[in-house]
Structure formats: C-alpha cells, structure tokens
Length: 407
Image (cartoon, rainbow, N blue to C red; front, side):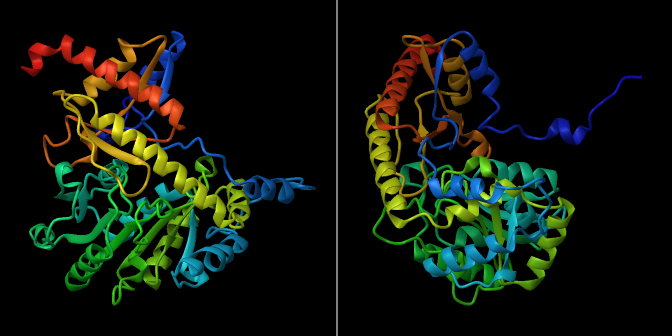
C-alpha cells in the first residue's frame, strides 16, 4: 500500500509569488544573478529602535516563554496609543489582537466572517493568498472586475450588487492594493461601506500598505466609515511599515466584540505570536516620522523609474500606482507565466536575469490577467534600472522566439 497526501492538499493553489523560486534557485546555482522584482521584500533599512528593543529585552534572559495568545500587553497598548490613535483610528486595547503577520490575520478574518459554502466579494486583481485561504476554508470568492487601462478604477456599486446572493458574507479588499497599487478614495470606501451596511456584510480591510500612499489625499481607513463600526474587520502588519517582514507580526482589529471573541479562539489554538518579533514591533513603535517621510520619497523615486521604463518598452502598459510598491503590467505576450519561467531558465544578460510574478492568479475572472505580471519596485534605483533593462531585452528576445505564437 502506498501513502497518499490528501486530495485537498493536491488541489491547493500554489503561490504565484513563490512557485517559481525553484527556477530562481537553479539559475543562481548556475552562477546567474537574479534581480527579484517578484516579491514585496524591501531592501530599505529597518528602524534601529526595532533591533535595539530585541537586544534590550533579551538581556539577562534564560529562556523564551509563551506570551498571552492575544500578544504582549505592552505591544497591544503601544499599537493603540502610539500608532492607531495618532493616525485617527480610535480603538481600545481589547479591540486589537496580535497575529502571526497579516497573513494569519486575514485568514482568521475570512473564517470569522464566512462558513464553508459561503461567498466573499473581492475587488480584482487581489492578493493571491486570499484565494488560497478561501480554498482551504471552502469559501468562494466572487470578483468585481477592474480594468488595467482605467488604472483599476473601482466600478459603480451596482457591480457589487450583481454579486450578492443569500450566501454572501463579506467584502474583502486591500487598500492600498497588492498587487495593483490602487489607492481607494474616501468616496469609494464610503460607497463600499454603505453597501456592506445595507446588506449586513462584513468589510475585511487589509491595510498593511497604509504608509505607502503617493497622493496629497491621505489614506482613508475602513475603520473611519461612519455607521460601519460593527461591520469592519481591519487587518494590519508591521512587515512593510517598518521593513520587518521576517518579524511575522500583524494584528486583527474590530469594534465588533463577537469578532474579537472569535478571533481569540483562533489565537489560542496557535498558542502565541512570535516573541522576538513582538519585541521588535514594540521597539518599532518609536520610529520617528522622518523615517516614513524618507521611505515614502524613496518609493516615489522607484515607482517613477519603474513606470517610465516599463511604458517605454514596445507593447508594454503599466498604469501609475498611487499606493503600496507594486504595479501590474500588461505585456505583449500570450502567457506571462511562460515568459517569467523562460527568463529564469533560458535568458540572461551578462550573467544576470530578472524574476517577476505572473499575475493570472491575482484574478478570479477566467482568462483575465494571463498577459499580466506584478512588478515589485523594491530595489534601489540603480539596481532597478538594471533589472528592468534586462527585462526589456528579455521581452524583446522572447517575442522574436515566439513570434508564431503571437501572430
């Protein structure tokens, strides 16, 4: 008798962001330098205060214990007073629970909001892992489409209305959006909030890129939608804000007591969040505003470089993103995943190549996004220019080799 893994596991979708990593590793083993534009892992320095807090709190320690399942009270109080209230989100400590990164937070939020067989409305393109967690929990995602040629503008709320069924339980969005860089306006958020309130739906708002907004209009949080206090479940993380991706610290926030009670059950089941990561997050709360101002200015430089170079490539279209540090790019190819693979297996320029993320799995609508990739402009401008130059040369070569397929 042979052993078999479960059918559920076999059917589980692979991460579009990471499934080509074996090809990248193989390229590196051949001596190829790979410029990573596939993953949102910034190269910007983390705040010194985050590391110093870990050092200070570990002095004299003889063992590393569990913390409360909701997270260290020092961190929860600090997040409420030093961060959320300062940015105009008025919450109390019992309304915040520390999670194992934003990933656990939105996985929990989806399970709190919906049962197997239920439906959640998403705005596409959406973060690909939403689909993974929906699949694992028997939830169906129903997509409100947006158009790359319109800068992913949110359509009229009537498009949301078309998707409502007796099994609809929530709307899930990221603002600013991963992967598109779309920044939801206050008016759009108010309209979606009104929709959720009228249909008695939860609004799960993934706001991990809140600090990365590139307009004069400030970020408008779902937590500030009037009359929607009981509907909103906020998902957040320290990964991007403080460049602490490896700390794996996020949180779930809601004024809804039933939501927080349910979230605590999930928290208890995994015992506690990472202790050293919590220490780093406590220290990061003392990060000065000048740090965020400098990071924002740097990302604007990188964004402008990326958008300019991409749109200068024949047949390529990249709308200007106004948040996060990603852009979805339309390529003149039939299959963007095949192109991304080919860049890692067959192409290099002077010993270097570029890795991007195929974007089809960021969409729910069949066939949409097959010629799209997500670009994460997380490299310094000189390296970013080299990476995009290689991408452009690779694209030109690929199109010549595949001219018959694209005719």
